Length: 329
Image (tube, rainbow, N blue to C red; front, side, top):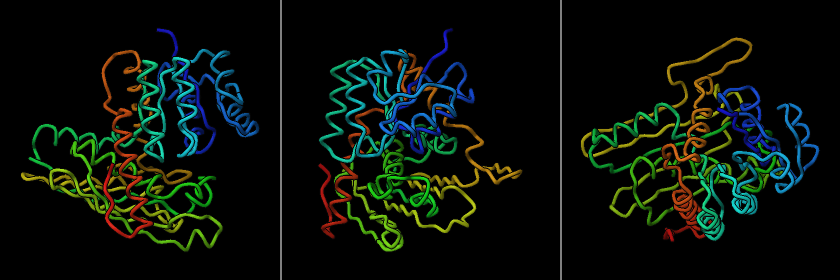
């Protein structure tokens, strides 16, 4: 079987991780086709590290590399243009979460891929994280009964917005982190969110010139009366012994599940301390996307789910500003 080649659009934190993962051969039979970024120096630096070519625009990259698929990892609010262009060129696309930061952009992207007839997914990576996948199996099998509530958190050390994410002032911990929790609740419970009440705080990051929230808390009500309480914070101390603090409790009428993704039963300490990433579920996720793009199975990580999560996040940010409960469109 011929090697698959993936074009990486966006040379920031997530694009760099994807390009290096492909260059290291961690997804068998898949290699980088090239790196696209409007910052030529950034694109060239990553392309050189990944042993591939750098481009300043998508059209040229597609014309010269003929990729089998593309991965879009531009900043949260800048997904629409590359997704629409790639769809118009007939390229299957995997786009980073959240799908968009406005309902208009999310719906426009969903329409663009439908109109073009191309396969497209949102990179809801945690759906491939082993403990969440096992929880999904148990819930699908009816072991928990009807899901009634969620309680989750996804937190990062302060180095994430201060150093790793150069555009953190253009997003929030809700867009960047809580979006995963909202998707997990949607995926595990298949529930429609109808309202959200959110609170958040500022100070640590704004004091360092990064105009964003330090943390966000949200209470979500679902159409069937279930609810969820969620936390996203990215000012944990850098001494925190992990790259993230991710946990979710799901309570049903006949059982409950609790996932703490910090350890997962494996830790490695050699030149540095490592844990969950050694389990390598990111390659599994990309491989599943490429199989689905060929019509071999379905992942369920659809743009429709991406639109639903975007609308919930839009309502959350309205609540942060209004101080009241906001309806989800």
